[in-house]
Length: 391
Image (cartoon, rainbow, N blue to C red; front, top):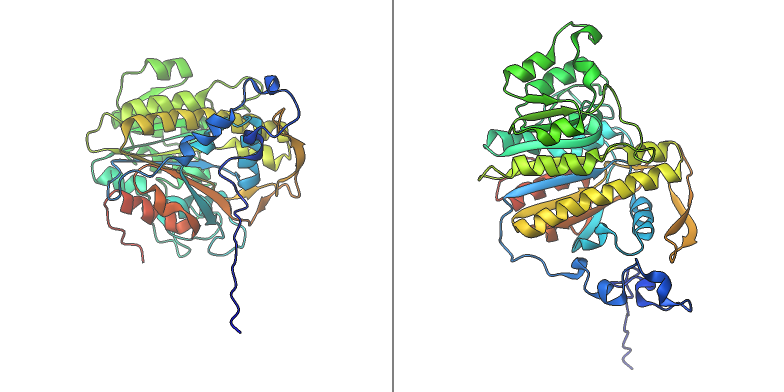
């Protein structure tokens, strides 16, 4: 007697979140600011991919430092169904281990994402043996595309430094600042001015003079940045590090992103840009859920600006991921209706779990599934119609 087996696979992640279905006893009047069931059904995340074979003219890689799956879901809940993460039609996971550790740091993590190479923890833009490796931004600069980055940390921190610097230790700020002053990127926005001042350096050099000689306008505030008409712009918002967004930090992430897009989009050849929400990580290191959620809300505003640009442009690949997860965040419960999360952290350091990947635009479909963090950069190159030489 023949036996027939039928296996029914039920996806654990549904296209329509449970609260979007309105299966609550409470009055729908309490959901005024939340997404309606129709909005969930029509969410851009359900849209079809762009036509196969279309090349990306522009690439924007966005890193939420320390942002794991739990952090993303905390933001989705806090935004009450209107999260910009839901606008991405493709998603997957990234394995973040470094060359010498199960759990990566931001140096090795950032280097892997933008260069396509594993390296040891604390290394920036070099292999474990010290061999320099180019980032996708450095490659784009050589090809004549515009390049830039915007961060809510120092411009010399591990993630931004991985786009332009080549050092064996991430705290070599004097050397990293020299590399930045000579990298040729069009827009560089963040903190960290102190390390560029000769009086604060062991070598006595003045990278600020180098930047000026290389044709950059240097601005020192949000208002100065907005008023700038230069196509080569460096903005230092603070001497060292920004404070958290919650006490009233200027909207430097979203405004810096908009300014960078205005400048970079002028290049008819296209651009490559890196954006980092740096302090999601800091909130999680502090095991401070309010700090983390405020930074995620700030990150959401930046995502909206980027996705609005990409949707209008039609030729821009947007890839969002993290260098690692921080805090071992567990969401024990919460209140969907009120957008509240009950957060518990199991460490004040990094964890080794996979992190999410979101993609929109030409080539976005290739970022689905489980991948290594070093797979991301070659996929970006492929989306641009460029060949990767990484073995």
